[in-house]
Image 1 (tube, rainbow, N blue to C red):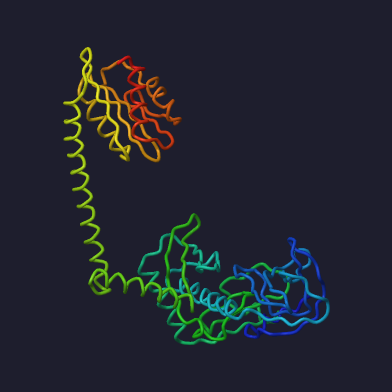
Image 2: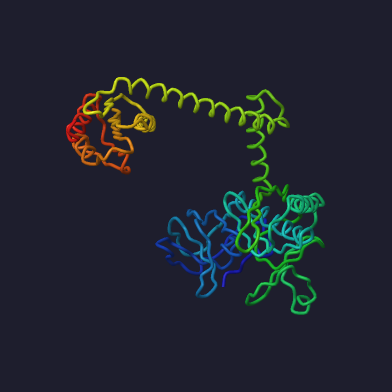
Length: 399
């Protein structure tokens, strides 16, 4: 079986090894090596990438049948000895994130008695699921402060396989159910946990443990965070955003929150004022249209079409017009999508659906609405075509 060299050395990235087996996995060539520094996906930590000979290592996984480490490649490589190289940037990133998780998990136990029951190391962020209800902002802040204090202390990180006599004496944070030897990772005298992942040699290499967010889950609370270079890049990105915003709003970064709150209040007031203005404008327009309505047997009919007008305004005009008794509104708009709105006063016993069907016959669109207001749309149409459709609706109504 492959000797997993990363267990005792997370820092070596170049090595040589005989190829023990060549095979196919998911349609890709794959090899089993006599020894390997490549970490396979397991325990919440993603696999390493890199190269073997001339091939790129795309994935590394453990074969369920026999526990062998499979290296999935982008091309076949010949049998014999091969040189391997692990992508150090990806490896060290995972080392920072995973070691940071150990420290943070212990910090939440110390501060909030919240035990970690789940761990995920993704491309964008890292998260732990805590066996706890909603965490207060204060306890979350204290946990991160404690964790970063341990980073600053530069505690040594040790990974080893305890002997059968030593293992029972270790107060592990969590003891997983695994077959074979159990690997333990100690972060100074702060945390002791069983883990098969890759880790830094001292907590100072984590750099920083930076909170992102917390959210309630069915089984507890999820805490998302970043470590090391990920945290630095996130800080740089957010610093750039806040700097540009403070320059645009002519305020300091510390004043941004108040400035944004003020802008939101001003925007809400402006939207309310604009909505009131639009309502007043529609009121006035509906009043003007009503005076120009044609009248037949006591029925007032307003027929009008516009070019490129929002259908919401048509509905607003139709409802205003037909709030008066004995009134019929036949309205339409031309444009990339022609729209028709037909409406009647509440007391009129007119079925507008046949009229809408007749009007849409020339437009080829759909329909919708209730008894008093019906609405339909079709493909692009010019103003003349929409006016003709309204005439067809009027003829259908016998007007």
